[in-house]
Length: 349
Image 1 (cartoon, rainbow, N blue to C red):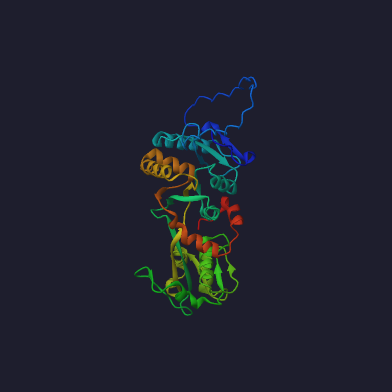
Image 2: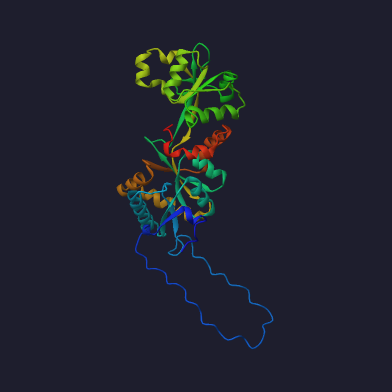
């Protein structure tokens, strides 16, 4: 059996998630005492450590985590049981599942190698990397893409556009294009929005372009409205492209000319991803990646990842995929612990 989790009082070990009815291991019996030796040995023999079974063996299973919850639903438990069974059947490794109470608990377990496979949302994955707890494995996708971008926008009569809408690409580097925002007042969406605040603000900090204190106007569409009306802020940030929201276009036919894209942040903001503990050996990681790659096209594989982790599809990625997102989120100075605490009600963007 695997080592006990570091904080057993806050983990619910789901023994029913074993993928088959494995026979219970017998309790060791106390050995019969032998008579004391008649002579004193000159030296004690070195202790012999019991060799640990390879990771994924029957008595040293790989552990996958459910999404953190204090009270996992029976339906979620069923989905986890099915995923553990599928992975066990197709990889040859033994799997069981646990249900952590919170993302901090899950990250700690990944760091110590007590959990080997887990899904993490963007804020939690950055925290996990800070603790060197994980390695990238698979990124989830929406409508065929694994990440999305953001954009700096502003009134066309005040700023120069360094984004070509016809070619859909920037025409200058970020430091050149964004220097015109120095000491200007931004409109942001809300403090937990990656595209509407955290990543744009982090990028400005990274390039040392100071701005005035921003105004949080809640929605991406309100940022666009505020810039068109004027008097609230000088520039703003939204996802790509909030200006195309039909009610905005219907109310303001010339909106795209009045509020321009100053510069576009490439699609570096990820969706949730699957991560392996950094403690998983490379050969086991390679075998698991192949197993999941072959499992995903199957209806049962696609269904279980969708049901358990709300992931439409998955593509293999490496750690480089998350570098820029991590860089700018950390540069924003955001309180990651506070952001992680809001994950249950996090915004879509």
